[in-house]
Image 1 (cartoon, rainbow, N blue to C red):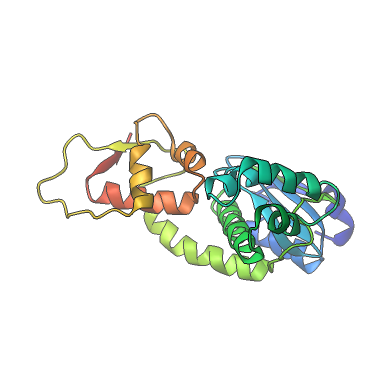
Image 2 (cartoon, rainbow, N blue to C red; image 1 turned 60 degrees about the vertical axis):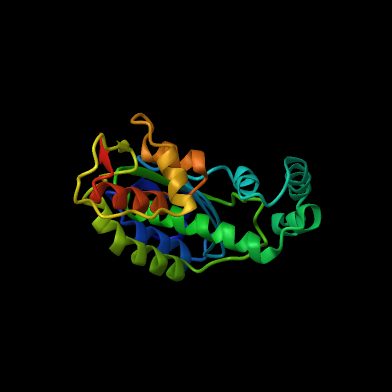
Length: 236
């Protein structure tokens, strides 16, 4: 790949490795949107080779994510988004209209970026396209180096290899077990884990549950892996 071809950079993750694509865009300091479609539908926004925003298959739209986290009202978010459309960085608009500290915005956004990069690295059946020049309202906010995000993704990957032996993909459906083995260990669940359990109906996929909760696919899968290995749930 060369810098001259980035405007029309496209292919499949079978042609190029995920890390190779990210490192190329970082090394050539590209600005625009990396769009994936197929098993994973994700977008990563770049500015000068660093990533400042992302949407992933399993994530809520950004505006809904702020609402789901209880950080602002719909009215406040609408006002902030409206101002960002006029060129004001979204992080500044959120602080002004909703009182959301920039550090809180950065925390939520970075979590979404790590989710998207991780999904990219564990997906093989997807097409990608880089759209040079595309911008997101988050432009002008905190940016993250590709290398730091790849490192965070690799840490998750070690855990994911264990999870994947039980949960083949986020398309899998999990339901509570009919009978829990008598020798099953006691399970103490956190409030977040209980919310996952409450959505197990034998029909919703892991991706569906993640979207409904506005949670990280990795965290949901980790919870389900724990339940399945303990005999409290099963893959349909």
